[in-house]
Length: 123
Image (cartoon, rainbow, N blue to C red; front, side, top):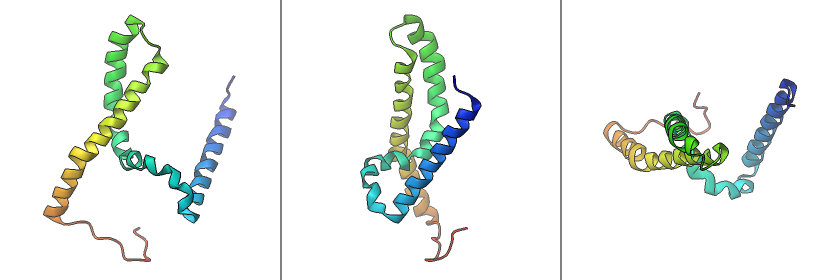
């Protein structure tokens, strides 16, 4: 049985793994080259964050509870892949067909944001 103490250990280990991965990438960027296929998902991570409550609410509260669960055709944890993949696909499409064009339009209309000087912090 999992206890709260075990959860703290897991969170601590995940934080350490994240820190070490970031440290390795910072010191030797080529070491993380195998992650290059995930860059598009990283680019749309904020879109995923913003879109997921809407899509998952629809696909879980409506489609799962009203259609799929009563029919008993697939288990919940197998069905869970559908909302997750749908969120990623919608975020990728939103980036390509909405966010990108709007960003280009706004940059052309109002100019790009100034970039910080080399060697100076943006904060």
